[in-house]
Image (cartoon, rainbow over all chains, first blue to last red; front, side, top):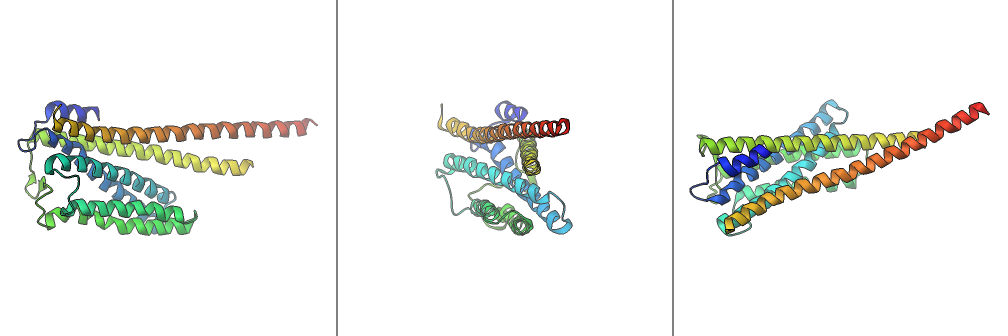
Length: 209
Length: 57
């Protein structure tokens, strides 16, 4: 993370069009891609739960989606700040990618309403797994929306011709993305360990009661 | 400080604030778990003492 911040501040050149505000890109896009990765991982674990009945997969799916929502919220806020300085507005309803990302975010936010409205048990785990799998269909739609529609507001950096940026910018972007994935992975492991410990302590308390 | 600098700083502060809030929440949870472990350890010790008293008696 320190390396990413140092590269953004001292190595990556300022964008000719947007100037300094383009530096938000190095955090905003990796955070968005990490949110997609978290939702994808959550759906994969949901599939493992439904298909293989893998023990603990439901909890892993829940924690991954929780992180996806956190990273999704950060994407929306940093994106809004960038939009304000670049386009003069906090939000543009005409941009398909923005709206579809918001839909994806709200869809997975509703996952928690479902999870906490059903009593703990196999039924809740199955319902949540099916819901998580439905949501994953929105990820490619959200990602490809800008390419499928003529969206001139939101910029397209990664095209079929490769990344539309200089080598130094691309290197900074890759380091930032790696840092964000490492952060998400660390938070995921810490939260998962906490939740597992919590469950074991509850079990121990029942045994000692 | 220019407007662009303010917005860039705000965006980075948002990320920092999120991570900080998350770490604080996890820290609070770990403290609760530590407290629970201590309570359960005390409970287990009390149970063992009761068992030993019964054996001696």
